[in-house]
Amino acid sequence: MPNKRDSFLASAGWADAAHSPVAGDLSIRQYTRLSKGSASSILMECGPAIDTSLSDFLKMTEWLRAQGLSAPEIFAADTAAGLILLEDFGNAQLTTLIAQDPTCQMPRYDTLLDTLITIRNAPPPSLATPSARVFCEATKLVDIWYPAANTSGLDAFRAGLETILEKVLRAPATVSLRDFHADNIIWLPERTNARKPGLLDYQDAFLTHPAYDLMSLLTDARTDVAPSLRREMIAVYAYRTGDSVEALTEAFSAFGAQRNLRILGIFARAARRDGKTQHLKALPRVYGYLSECCSHPSLAPFAGDLTTALPAPDARMIESLAL
Image (cartoon, rainbow, N blue to C red; front, side):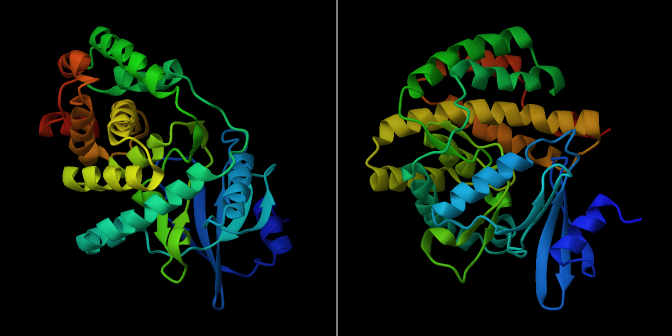
C-alpha cells in the first residue's frame, strides 16, 4: 500500500523519478533530488508534528516571487503531510563558487545587494517583529552549550546590547529572510540582475532593521568575508539606499554581535546534543566576527564583559566539543 510520500509523488507526476539525496544543514528538513529524463525537481519533507514551517515557506515563496525574485516555483504541496515539491535550482551553491574562485565573491555580493534592496523596498507581508529583548534572549543558547561560558558576564553584555538594539529598532522595519548567506544561495547565471541569486531557507523570515540580512551575508559563518570587503559592501549599500554609513554600521554591529553570539551557541549545541560536528571548524571565524562587531564604539563599553565571559575557541575546546 503506498505511503503518503509515494501518493504525493504519484499525484504530482513524479512516481517513477530517480531519487538522490541532497545534503542538508542543521535543520530537521530532508531534501531529495528527483530526476526524470532531462527534468528534475526537489522534494522537501519534514515531520509536520515537529516542523510547522512549511506553510511559512509557501507564504514567503509566494511573496518573494511576487517581487520578481528567484524563489523556487512550487510544483505541488501537502503541508499536512509535510511535503513540498519545488523547482530545482541546481548545484551552483555560492559557498562552493567562492571557494573555487575567491575573485567572484565581490561581484556576486554586489548583485546580492540589489536583491536585498528589492526586498527592503517591497511592501512587507504580515510577519513577526522581534523586540530587542527577544533578540537578546535568543543568544542564551551560548550560556547552555558553549564551554566555560559565564552567564553573569553574558547577562551584563546582553543588558548593554539590548539598549543599542532598542535604539536601532526605532528605524522602519523591513523583511529579513534571517539566514541570508552564501550557503542558502544558488547562483543562476542565466537570469538577470537581482534574479541571479536563487533563494533558499527563508521560512523563518521576520520584520526588522534592513541591516540584519546585510550583516547575515557579510558575517557568514561558513564563508570568510574580509573586513575590507565588508566595509566596501556596507558603503555601497548605504550609497544605493541613501542610508547614513555611520547609522548603518552601528545597526550592523549590534545585530552582528547578537547573531554571531547566538551562532556560537547553535554550533556548540549541534555538536554536544546532536553529534553534528561539521561546523565546529567555523567557531574561530564566528568568534572573530563577534569580536569585530563588538569593537564598534557603541558596543565597546561593555564588550569587556563578553570577552571575560566567553573564551575564544581554541583547538582544545573544538576537540572537546567533537567528542
